Image (cartoon, rainbow, N blue to C red; front, side):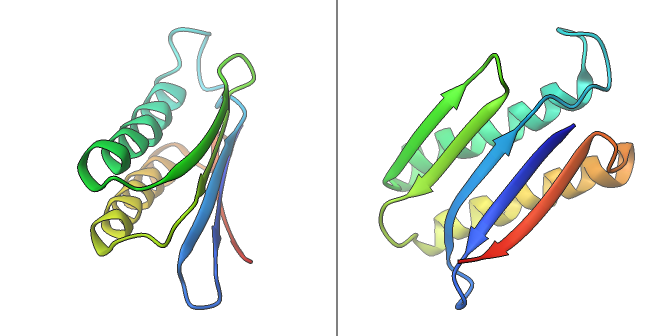
Length: 109
């Protein structure tokens, strides 16, 4: 299962998110849930960097299915919109395939 945890301040400001594990929906290289999650997460990180210039500290381990994205500065409204959009897409995956393969968590920091 893949677990994505979003960390937000009391005011609702995104501080970081982590993505851990492999979905396990299909065989390695054929897992459409894992591929969909990876596409959304990586595209959002790339968009945050290229389109909004968000400052991030990113740690990854592809073999373990791990991504940690910590935001260094406050995010712009455009950056927040990109993260909200990623969550919308990920929620759609949960709705279509179930919590057995993808779990979204939200924590206040």
